Image 1 (cartoon, rainbow, N blue to C red):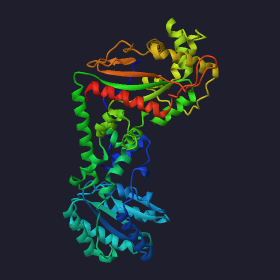
Image 2 (cartoon, rainbow, N blue to C red):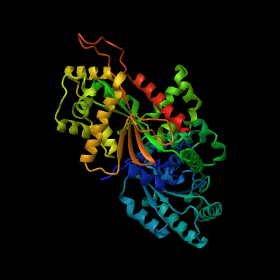
Image 3 (cartoon, helix red, strand yellow):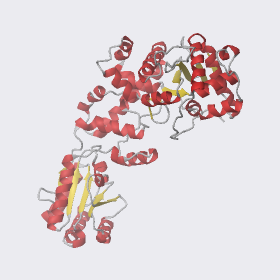
Length: 505
């Protein structure tokens, strides 16, 4: 077996065609209803057409004319999200005009309002004679009960659009189309909504990632709008900007290495550890919540000096957290104590009252730890509730944590050896774990634990020893709680900035 950690940053997924959006949403298990936004003007047009059909009892034909990328297909394919009691059927380019007529007749038993879309023919090459036959058949059908339907033809080519419109009007006039004529000019979403829809799409298709995590702030996106006639062109510009940002950072690291930076939090209370990690991460992979980080940087009430460096690089903040794959995990007091008892040096064990433990207990704790699950590229979507930590376990951890102020290297080595031992036992190969002695290539950085997958791919594990400040009667006094989200967020921001500066990215 080999560790399977992707080295190349995942590309931005921002589909410009509905078919790709539908496919990606299916692959990711995303709901399109959470991505697609209502277009008020086009919705009103559909509502008016359905109203005419209901009142007049005759069918309606409408061309939806708009630029490529304006969202015509997406709007029409998702009408059921915004209208109740409708049935939408699409015909692709393989369906003949006669197929359309036959399908409408065959569907007469449906009680819902029926909408038919002539799809995949945005730039059609169709003869006038063929159109005349089709519209004459529609004119006759629309007068029958089974023909009380709406047919919409989304189209991009202006010449074809005029030809189709002229023929439809010549053949049937108001018997086929609204009095305003067969052509409806579809303009799509207003530009003010482009960023919001793009961000919703990115979040849904990229495991909760935001546009900002790809290096595109709202201000940067706004600067693109003047050159974008459609939301499709806006998406293209977003992708281009994201690619350029990613490429520029990779060039800087050609002689170095791009690390993954994983912060590991230890503490005396499993419930407090879990609460803090959950508040600072998103999803099930331990990724630091970039939305929270950016909101924190944008809050003018946060005036701490350590934020100055980040605010100078505010436009890149979200991207840097994603580029460096910043994650936060916690190791329970049981895990930490077991690792020290089984793999720790005499120095690491000095503060413990119980100095030994069965290796099998430690191995089991390692395998169930979120850090190990992530290292071995597994997925753990379980909703295990964290049990409260027993007082004797909490006290043992506090004794160790006191030592961590001056002897954390020995404690980190015990954790490192525990992970290395289980990786080897589980059959993983071609990896190396180095603790407290290996500098990151091309830098002066020396991570607490360095997991080397190959010379250009490493995970830097930074361990921070914390506690709730609970006292041990007769041994220690009550101290400040350093396990709170505020303390850990500060540590993360400072630690990541160390890497950013040293890597010069």
